[in-house]
Length: 363
Image (cartoon, rainbow, N blue to C red):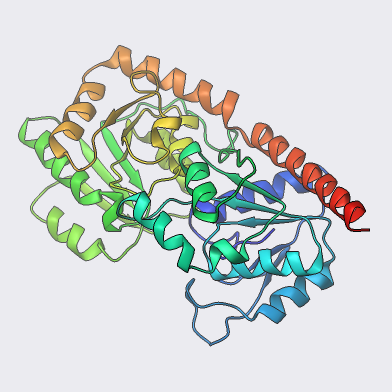
């Protein structure tokens, strides 16, 4: 397993790598995670950057990546995230070593028109260096983007992110009118829009609390925005251990993203906790949230519409209960790690078989 970030790190890709690794080990597979950022230890091995500076844009040494994969002698390598330097070099190393490789795309362009990013793909190294055995993506939107960006002629398999439905589950506690956001505090996540929507709710006399978990460069600005408003709590970085309680105690989970949202693992954590979602119609979000069934979808960048949707849920106990049940059911039936893990396991065997056929043709 290859990921820019350690499975011990905070973040969507890291949590998916950790969850899938543990599930595979329970199935009897031996798993090693190769990463560049964060803590190593256990089954996680860290490769060094070419300079002593930890940032995802700084590449590792190709020869170290290749040598490490060669030393481990894996049957198959699963590379997460398509555009970080470690991911690109790991796929390239697998090609050189003749090791079957599954590449999973977790992302969409962070901003701007997708067509613009597709045009510049011809002058980037990705189109020419990324030649994995099988490509998967976490959503249809992410699959379409990576297929066109890399010029892939074969099918890109859509395998969604997963959630641990045993950790994230509803609890028999009375939920206050609490809106929860967990994620990075960057502009494209739209947290400033959420704060504006919260102020609208307060002006309308709704008794509600907003809890914001996460870190990012916009945190000082967001705290300034919230300084004239009561009942907004900033938690800072949220550990994986504290997340289940946060999700199960919230009445509504909000994801007001403006762009670049290929999936959003936090959406699954909310659904699994029986917490209805109010989110924007961007990227892969509409593939996960069924508008009116397990959440409500609004247009991005519109605090009025966001406030209306949240108020509608909070003022409709029967609708909230129905959506809560639907949310939990969807998480268990469609996104549990057992369901998603088996899809990846099948894909690994498929990659092994494809690699075997290629070797026979070459001979």
